[in-house]
Amino acid sequence: MSPFWLVAAILRSAHRVATKLFVQEGDGRIVDRTVDRVQVTRTVLGAAATVALVFVYNVNPDRWSDAAYGSAAQMLVAPVLLLVAGPLVILGFIYYAPAHLRPHMRSRLRAPLKAVGWYVLTIVVIGVITVPASRIGTDEQPTVMEYVLLIAATVVIVWGIPFFILASLYSARSAFNTAQVHPMLPPVITMALVWLFAIFNVIGDGLPEGPPVVKFCAMLGGPLSVTGVSLWELHRMKTRFGVTLRA
Image 1 (tube, helix red, strand yellow):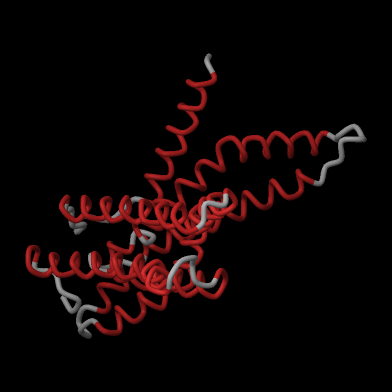
Image 2 (image 1 turned 45 degrees about the vertical axis):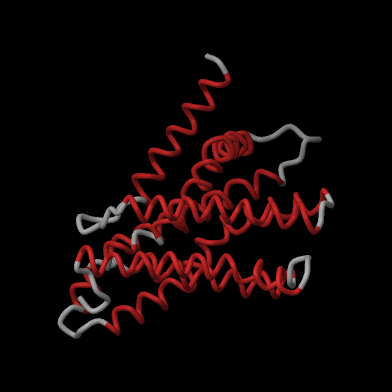
């Protein structure tokens, strides 16, 4: 068995389980390939703009690593922010809906709650296994239980970490399957999330390098472009599919 085949098999297995648990958007899911293509284009252009800013105004190699680590951190932190901000947006969404629709929307919270539960369980299992395993000393002969813990930690690292990364990506993309509650919830939650990230980035890192105009464009370009695409997606849902916030 080649290492490449083994890695591919692990990633395929993790992808299959992550998709099953975190990509369940329901029978009422709206598939709009035009929106999907625009979202991908916006992501590519945003990444290209970030690279251009780093290259033009700060070619320090540390800046490249900071940008890479920042993007990875946002990918992993996004579901955590969703756990905090998502319920508030959903509650506001349900409260804004007509009274006769609220019981139906509340009844469809099961899928998002299950996705949240699986995500939290993943974090707990990884922490419960890897943290004690990291404390096992190498200067003494491990006990049987320590051997078992080390084997479990190896499985977590080899399979669990790729699964966690994929789960984070899919959870952020689907907003924990909240489209089952209402098709418009994912873009609304996305708008709230991107502005939270913008605020945290300014508080933590300050404004980016460059002239004042470039600083504000770099700070607001991402949130404004994501907001614009999300509002356009909501508009297409209303005009092409007859979906509204109150129906």
